Each structure stands twice: as structure tokens, then as C-alpha cells.
Image (cartoon, rainbow, N blue to C red; front, side, top):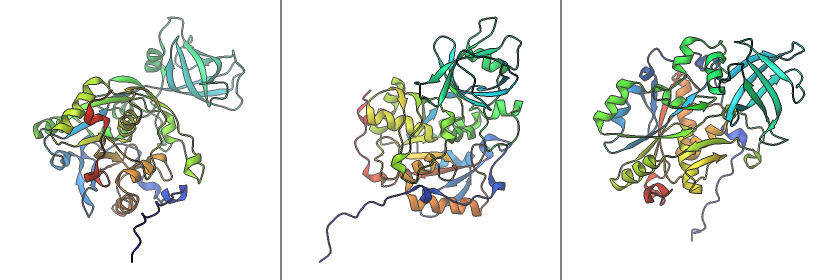
Length: 370
């Protein structure tokens, strides 16, 4: 007589999310047109190779697309210590009182109270106050200022550089300032782009409207921690980075209305997934999240995901594997490599449906909770 005992869940380790990627497939520049990128449709039994502008035909009238409307700031600043040593800052978060929390790349850490001279203006400076968010924090807290009293957002826009990911090897250009930004970017604060949304242009948005696909937005200020490697083979030992998010009341209502009409919630990007599922888990509509989504996670809001191709062994590989199924995702990645899709931030995209989508749990979104 066969046993009725449930199957033991598979235990995943870091090595399960590794794959070989030819360096030539790492996109260094975006496609000439945003919506001309390739789209790997992974919602069927077999992968289908498409162009991103075909997305409206793959969605249903009444579906709800949820975007991350964060705006990338020119968060990379260069300068030098009083001794002449070179310094690079990458601003992760703007704090009250003209303060910022930033990563600091320097040969020898300066002492607290040191003022760095930053490139771009004779009076642009950053004074080190300590570490952040506490005395053992991995970031550094600075006052960012100039003689005119401008705020950090103004100073970064005027004197900073586009914070291109570490695998993009060219210096930032005017084209990067335009293309490493979504067409609907609204709320400044990100140190990295929500890259799945980079494929949308005004013509595609109009086509989605004509199809009857609804739209809503959340905000999650993507941090440089999105590129942080996982260093522990045991995933439970990884410490996830924290990012600030907001789920507006209008978006909560849009999700409830989508559920009521039988539509699907389509997240554009993993940052949108992390925002919506953080809200569903905690009930908090705004705040910080360090949610770490790995296989076995119970999704409560998102039904369909538009996402780019992610780094081997990254937390984002774990998230998409949790969402669509590990074996399915790894097979899609093998197909993408064989078909020479372009990878990472400036690369192509894929469309995924949630594993066991017919078994959707009750979600906060369906109840309109805040």
C-alpha cells in the first residue's frame, strides 16, 4: 500500500543556483528600442521566443500590471581625502538633515569627522559622521553639502554619476542617464534600476491600455545590495539587505478590484514582487523590507512576473525559482543561453507564471487590507 506521507521538501543550497554564462551574453548596452528587447515566454509547457512589444497579447483584459516607480539617482560620487587619497561613494539612502548613507571605496578608511572633497564643484564635500544604520553597519553616514546649501538630491543630480552595475564595464554616459531609467520613474531614491521595467516605452503602454490591461505602481528604492553576492552555502545564513518601500492606497484598491474581476496581478520586476509580498506578510504599507524569497515561499499577491535574467547564485535567482519552480526556471535559463539571449540589467526579459497558480491563497490584496 503506497504511503500517504507528504513528500519531504527539497533543501536547496547556494550551488543549486549556479550556471555557466558566456561573458559575451552580459549586455553592456540596452537594445536600440526599449520594447525591441527579446522576451522569453515561460508560461507554457515549452519556451517561446518573442519580442517584448508582444507582451499585451500575452496578458488578459482585466489583468493588473504593477510597476516600481522609483527613480534612479546619480548616486556615484568621486573625490579625495585631505591626504589626496582617492575615494568613491555610492549613496544608498538619503537621510534627514542633508545626510546620506553610502558605500565607501577607499584604500584606508578616514577617521570620523574627516571632510572629503568631491569632484564636480569646489565647494562640494562630504563629512564622515560614522557608520550606518548602527556602529557596526556596513554603510557610512555623511553630511553631503555645498556652499549654496543644496540638498543631496540636487547635488547628486548635478555632480553625480549613474550607478551602473559592476558587470557593466564602460563609464556612464548621457545615454545611460536616459536608458538606465524607466519612462515612468517618479520617486527619487534608487541606487539601481528596476530593470524589468526598462523595456516599457510609451507605445507599449498605450498598447496595454488598448488591450484593457490596468496599471498601478509601488515604490521600492532599489539598493546596491541587489548585487550583493550570497556567500553562504546554507541559504538560511544569508543576511538580506534592507530597502524602503511603499504600497499606496490606490494600488491596494487596484489589487482588490483586480481580484474581484478575476484578473491576474502581474508584477514588473522582482522589486515589485518583494514590495507586494512584504506588504502581504506584514500588513505594513510602508517601511523597510529585508524579505528573502527562496523555494517554498508562499506567494500571496503576485500571479505573473515580468523579469530580466539574473546573476548566478543571486538572491534574485532564488526568488524566480521560488515563483515559477526551480526545474522550470533552470530549463528556461539553459534555453536562453543556447538562444543567446542578453543577460542582466540591459539584457532581455522573461515572462513567468506562478507555480500552482490555481491554488492561490487568500491574500491581503484580495481583502483590501492596509
